[in-house]
Length: 505
Image (cartoon, rainbow, N blue to C red; front, side, top):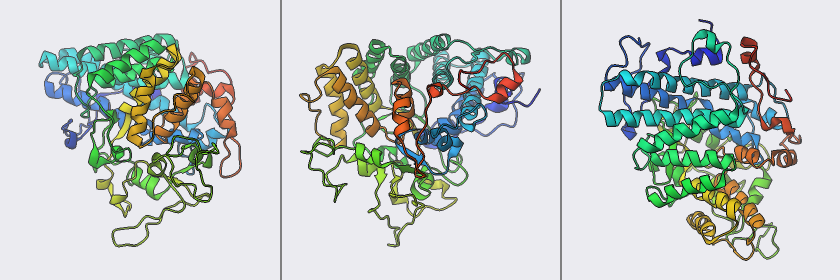
């Protein structure tokens, strides 16, 4: 078989079903396989567990795992000074069919879909408990929906497979309409919702994971009432709640926690995050993300007023005093100094004026951080959390019917956890003003988590917002309307002339 990206992954062997080891969550603690023969595999419940592990392992690839923070570099939140996946180049308009980011998204998504399709094609041959088999199938339907959702958000129409294709099929596939792929996503998630247990997240997708992901799909496609109804199911279940410590929810020592609905699970040192470690190194030591001043300004005062309000009490000579507590839980300011246990100063690569850096995900109790400290790099990357369900409900309900008491109530839950006062209902009393407030709150609550880019796309304001960004090198952001969809990777079109390119590339 030819060595090619998408198609070798679509057709991939069972080597794709490598292990996903996570003893700390009692997930799947299995030995890696060099190769698996379909003639001897898919017989026992242990085979099913290994196959399921292979599907989950796909989440650790690049932008489904901890590298997902790199989407931040495409937004007005922070500059990525090391340009992983070419995101800093893309911010200033350098997006082409040969760019690294779309190629990575494409290949990793189809690798995940391939593993899921192989599992679903073969699980019927396994002799095991019927209830557990149904749950396993539900988890894989959830994962396949997750991977396809990434693809349609980035590329629009994409090739769709529900079974492993033949070589001929793989090399002659055409793009399936986004609406058709969305129907598959909805069906997969409905199937998952029907069988997954209504329990807290434990490393596996659960019912709340599928409900929340389907709510996100509806939100991104402006299906407001459907989104709100699914969010309400999650809220009323009582299975999840806001973890009391905003900063601490991202630290390994506090995971899993009540606010986690779905995450990519890591166990150090088996699941080494990157070449040397994880987010504590990349964000805490290397300062990969450098927040813009405009992002710092986005945080309100702790009385609920923006710093531009002359009655807010903002003091430009002491700009971090009495601000939304999430500011200093997410961003390290120039005045802050970190110390090692011996009292020495921990030096970071924070070299770009005005010397901000992202500290969300960084547990400073782990200092000092050095190459090879993989046993410290154990945090899971949260992909869906309960705060998002609350704010999705708020946005969807406001868009569907305008402000009502339930909208303010869920926003106020998020604010209260952060230590902020309730929404000023007199000031944010209309659908338009409350929409702006919800968008502000999403930007602050989910800062640097990889959601902002997709928010800008679905709100259709990326072409307005991103040209206002000025990089540390003094270059303005560039976002032509053609960039609302990324290009199909040229390497795939070269292999299959039936794959059409998105407009503008």
